[in-house]
Length: 170
Image 1 (cartoon, helix red, strand yellow):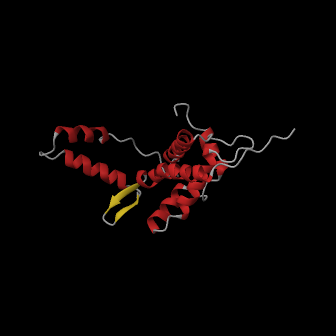
Image 2: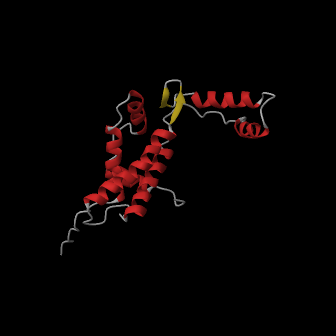
């Protein structure tokens, strides 16, 4: 006997769930961007090292307080870089997992599609990612979206794979 299809998800729930996913995906812009003289832009190679170096130099000034010195001490012995390569997607993937969990908790949608289910957390987040990339109009945001999603927007299966591979701590 074939499995009956469920009724479609209420469009208002879908709209609200996409808005919830957007709240989490917006962190992609904030987490991988740094402030520069022109405003906010993608983090440039080596800029974090320069920021840490400036922090350490500031902490060495006689006027620096103990709080600043304690923070700088954490960064004084940075591990050597292992070599060139594509950066990890761990932070991006964690934000996607958080977005799926938020959609699940706020709107009662199962994280992955059940047989015959109309919408799920992964389908909502995949739609939000597609909208995120389509909405990147400035050159900095277009570059950011190319770095985060080099193969283009993730489809529902790609988002589902990230959800399935999340750590047990989530």
